Structures are given as C-alpha cells and as structure tokens.
Image (cartoon, rainbow, N blue to C red; front, side, top):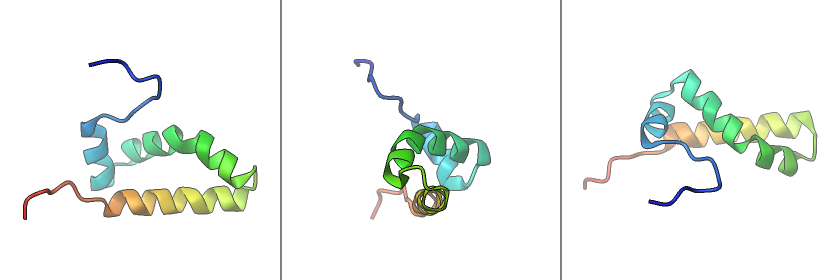
Length: 67
C-alpha cells in the first residue's frame, strides 16, 4: 500500500470519533483545520460553526454495514 501525501485518520481513530472520544475528535478537527480556515476566511464565528457541524456529522456517522 502506498503512502498518502495527505494525513489520514486510522480506522480505529474513526471508530473513537464516532463513539465520542475527545482525543480522537480533536485529531479530526486538527486534520481539517486548514480547510476550515480557508472556508471561514479567518472569521472566528464561521470557523466555530464549521467545526461544530463537522463534529456533529462525525458523531452521526455509522460503520454498521449489515442490513
């Protein structure tokens, strides 16, 4: 498997994010901070709103593929 030039979260970290682990959630936010900063154009209120939406979406994500 080739190395990605972009940092990624491991499957275990993603599972922890879904469970609500604070450390894993902080890692997720750190991973996306460059994108969040560009989207918010430095506006702290928008930055906080985008972070909150990212965390909410991550908590709602499901890994159960069985039907």
